[in-house]
Image 1 (cartoon, one colour):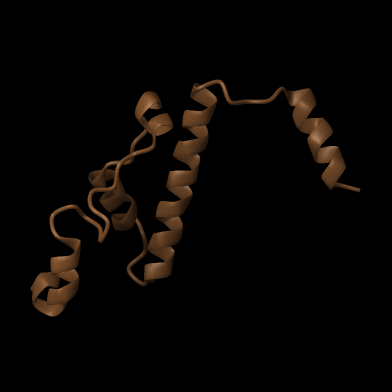
Image 2 (cartoon, one colour; image 1 turned 135 degrees about the horizontal axis):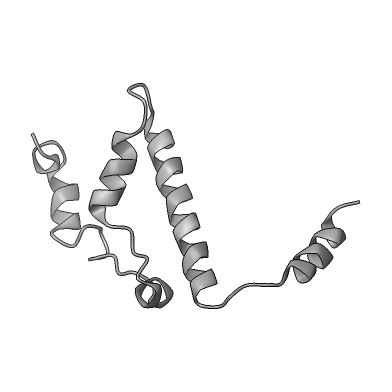
Length: 95
């Protein structure tokens, strides 16, 4: 049974685009860096969760992977700070 059997209105609203708002497009930064997470990568991340994992666990894992990929893309695009700059910024936060 696919979701169209269980939730027909939602399935019609989502359609073939994958979301209620149409196809989800990667950001320009992700496109330029070639760091778009594929559906297969998402499925693999979910497959590696323990059998008793919750939906929240899956969302947390996917969100973590997305954040890491975005930061890698930012670093690849030159959006980094020096070690000294990082120390200076952290000194403002820490006592």
